Each structure stands twice: as structure tokens, then as C-alpha cells.
Length: 305
Ligand SMILES: NC(=O)c1ccc[n+]([C@@H]2O[C@H](COP(=O)([O-])OP(=O)(O)OC[C@H]3O[C@@H](n4cnc5c(N)ncnc54)[C@H](OP(=O)(O)O)[C@@H]3O)[C@@H](O)[C@H]2O)c1
Image 1 (cartoon, rainbow, N blue to C red):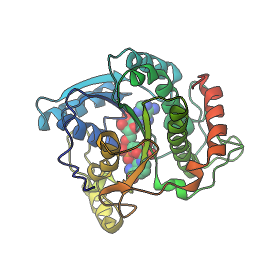
Image 2 (cartoon, rainbow, N blue to C red; image 1 turned 90 degrees about the horizontal axis):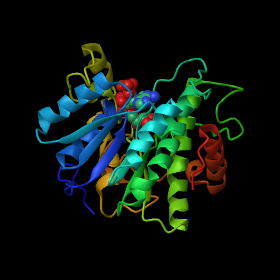
Image 3 (cartoon, rainbow, N blue to C red; image 1 turned 135 degrees about the vertical axis):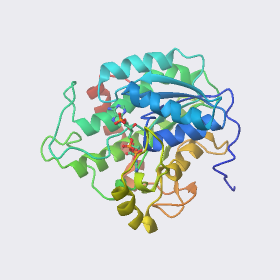
């Protein structure tokens, strides 16, 4: 089916929570959903940045229904409190697990909970938040969980015996592996929900290669320097703006025909219109998914499904 990212099906009456909504893909996802009429919960760790994003969306969509939820995905106490809030909502049509660190530190770092920072921020937080929000998703017909994958999942091997990279750390391995973990979780979640006869769908979407220097200027949200715009412009043949990169995510949230377990991405891999895509084999490996799931339950102290 032809999919028009600008003329979305009306989202009026739907409630969607987007993590890391104050910048990048999370901002553009929130904007597109608010423009289509959804009530969007901007789940962010910094209230000033969240307010700036809210102002920027309202400048384009004056009647946007927006609220802010405090969430630091690298802090399990914060995840639990945000999850309790979501669980108590009358309805939750979609949870978008977008928040993530894309430029990891050179040295291995741990969170307040003693977990490796990138794995915790990009995966464990999403795992525990989804588990906590499940009651609200369960009572909302046709609800979805959409998790952010990446082309990086094709580029590293999963170290299943050392998910938190205690033995040998590199920032790149930590980032790419965290995207394998989150994608694997997204697909496994769908399998487990189906087994239980749940109506919730879980999907995975990736934005190709989306960079801020090719993204429209938005005060307080995206203000790249002239130098950054120049350098990013040189990469135009294989990159796109984050406004375009959000399209597969928005499609996964809003396309009525998008089934559970689907994977969306740009047509040409790094860029292009949102289409069904082929996930990396490791992300759909059921054996690996079960091991990852068990480790996430232990790390977050969250029994889930
Ligand atoms: N851009 C790409 O080409 C690309 C490719 C593949 C996958 N992705 C995925 O897409 C997602 C967004 O990437 P992006 O390019 O939009 O990155 P971005 O512009 O750096 O935005 C990341 C967002 O995540 C938030 N965040 C980071 N750590 C957080 C924490 N501990 N708690 C709550 N929020 C946190 C950031 O908040 P602050 O502003 O407070 O830091 C920000 O809102 C990530 O999951 C990334 O892995 C991106």
C-alpha cells in the first residue's frame, strides 16, 4: 500500500508516549503524531529541553495535546515511577521506545544501578518501562509498542555471554549491541504477547542514517552550527534528516495494516520512504531473544510475561 507520511490516519483520541521526545527522532515522531491529532506524552529526562520541544511543536500545531513525563531510562527508580504513571492511564495506544545514547563514552561507565550505561539507557530502561506500562496497553484495543532498531545491528556480533561488556568494552560495540538487544526484545515481545492471546502488537523500526545537520532548524531542539551543516551536507547521498528518519517509526505507530512483529525502515536502507524492511538475523533469533530477556529480567529486577 502507498503510505503518505504527511496524511496520516487521524490519531484523535489516541494517547502515545514517546521516550526521548525532546530531540532528534523522538521530537519528529512526537510532532508528526501530534499533528495527526494524538495526545502525546513527551517522556524526557530534562524538563527544560522537554518544554522547548513542547513549545516547538505548539508553534507548528497550536492545538497539539501534549504533556511531559519525567523519565531517565538510565535510572531504574525513574523508570519505575514513569511506568507507574503510564500504567495508571485510562488508555495508552502506543509506547515508543526511542530514548538512547548514540555517542557512547570511550570508557565503560556504570549507572546508579550498577549497569553498563549504554545497555541500561538504550535497552534495560525500555524493557522495564514496557513491563510497567503493560496494564494500560492491555486495556487499550489495538495498542502497540514500537522499539528503535538500527542498521548497526548488521555490523557487530552479539556477545551473548557478556551483554554488559565487562570483559572488553568499546563504545561502538556497546551502542550497536544495545540496538540488537532492543530489536530482539521488540520481536520477542510480540511472540510472547501472541502466545498469551494479547491484542498488543510489538513492532521495530529503524531510521536509516539520520543526522542533525540535514534536519530543519528548530529553536531549542535542533540548532546545528554552520560547520556541522556543511559536513553533514557532504554526506547527503547516504543520509537524511531526522524528520525523514522518524517516518518508519510513525508508520509503525499509525499504519492500520502494520502487524505485530513487523520491521519498518527507509526503502534504500540509510534513507528513503518508510517501507517493510528485513531485520538482521540475530535480532529475530528466538534462542538469543530468550537469553537476552532473562538477563534483562535479572538486571532490572523485573519479572515480565
Ligand atoms: N540517528 C540515526 O541515524 C539513528 C540510527 C539508528 C537508530 N537510531 C536510534 O534512534 C533513537 C534516537 O536517536 P537520535 O538520532 O534521535 O538521537 P538524539 O538526537 O541524540 O536524541 C536522543 C534522545 O534520547 C534522549 N535520551 C538519551 N539518554 C536518555 C536517558 N537516560 N533518559 C531519557 N532520555 C534519554 C535524549 O535526551 P537528552 O536531550 O536529554 O540527551 C534525546 O531526547 C536512538 O534509540 C538511536 O539508537 C538513530
